[in-house]
Length: 182
Length: 149
Image (cartoon, rainbow over all chains, first blue to last red; front, side, top):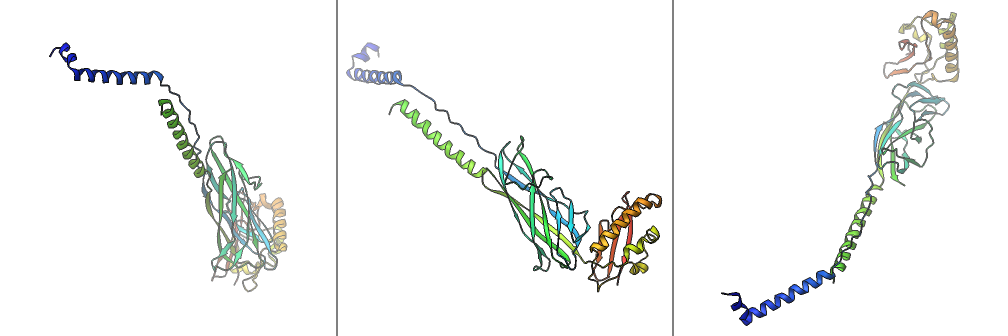
């Protein structure tokens, strides 16, 4: 079929006209389209984590039979005592907790110290803790900062209240440290 | 709706989704993290030292080391096995005398004990055995081993 014949056909005329209108409309629409871009941004913070890396061990000591005293382990892991006598300090250690998170971020520290309990499950010694981030100052601050590489260590020492004639035996307990971004 | 309007709506929705995601991420990151370490201590039964310091240091010399267990009771006496080695009397006298001895005699005698009780007051329940050891500066022990019944 020749092209002239096709356009003489009235149906072909109508189809062609409709196509032209549609294409024209699209063309007009494209001629008025515009685009713009909104920038979305955000920083996903590295979750702060804490891991216990050393336990708080007071070693061995003998209690005075008549006078209450204390046994202290510094955050640097050094033992000392009043009234009581430290008899074995080779196992003495301060607790240590490794913190990881965002570089240079400030974080809060909350230490929960519990008493230590004899294996008889009833006899106890009260425990009071101190902490720092350098195993020296024992400043027990509420907040510290992570390093430029996102790391920190919290050291925890403590003082045990030793009663006069404190029952001999093994005592145990826990120290929990909670950290959160400020 | 025009194409421009559609694009703006899409951008707003995307921003909202990202904001929610970031808020969730921050909320998770800021949640408390906590860890627990164990605490431990061992209280040893104390013993009573009566004449230890003066006896040990008589003639400005430490007794032969280690003290034969059979002779140990002359240095340490018990108070029904519940006595005190930590009294200020014992601690101060033993320490000061040992320090004095160390200064005067330690190097000649080769003892060089720097701590009256060293790092060990052991206890063997049921055997009535108490040990007190004094470390030398070279790390060896001047084992003052005592026994009481």
